[in-house]
Length: 210
Length: 179
Ligand SMILES: [Zn+2]
Image (cartoon, rainbow over all chains, first blue to last red):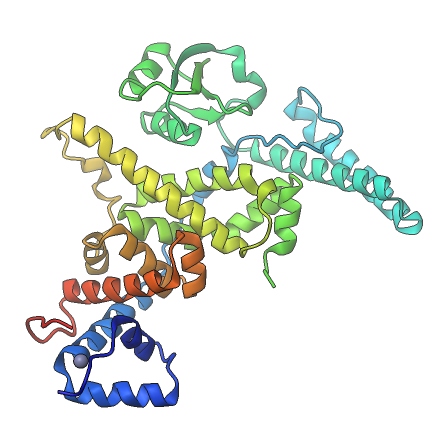
């Protein structure tokens, strides 16, 4: 058997073709003589082959939509204005109007180039897009509007994360959403919600029912 | 150049639509990472959901030091780890009910030889080989997102692949001898 065995990293580099020509030659010669190392190499290649032949798994379309719909609201520290309550019914026209304003202001500042106005325009455009997205989101889904968040009755506060609490409830057939503030609103009978949360440790995610 | 940069900047400013496009770009890779790590479709979807909520909330703090995909993978790896830990806890308290042998979850388990072999690996090996061989990450990216040196990453790939091949029963002619 040839002098000393290449180490793990050298064998991996050999298989991945990361060695210089000289190093490569050296390892190749060793492999001819060493059964143990050539077995390692075959395993590395077989493991790689099996993994690389495996297909990407697809997140079900429906789950993707649920996930996006349940994304919480994010506090934007630099946002200069934010409507306290939005009626979803008027969100689309408002968004369209805001988008127009955004484009108009943006167009104007390209000539003058004022920093603040530019910033304001971007904020305006972002808000419009966000509202647009929210208006679209709320389209087909059975969920409670976030505005109704704390109109409900507090069931109890359980361990987060909120998205997991929502999933737990949904698996029990109870519609639920993450509220803007990070609490959870469920739609169903108090007793059902309480039962669904029975095994959940106490925590800082408030669960409301309405 | 990070191909996601423009969308990331818009999503950082609060544009949900930009974030949704980023999700569409990466969702299958994120889901594959979670599913191959957890061995369950349902748990994987939960982990992806949790990860995307965290990503959305943390996005303003993303500095672009790493590629956006690397940043997302790290969040998914952590979320998958948390989901796994949560699943274990109740299982210890409540012995399995023979009347309910998790029938409704059965179809959610990932089947197939590869997954069974992966399930037998140490979590750190599984994460390393899935990132490297399935998702095509570099050693450096994996080192960054798992928080270990590159040498450790290589060693995990070496062992992960080797053990996987052994479990799959391929390329092994007979008993092992030491290195
Ligand atoms: Zn050898």
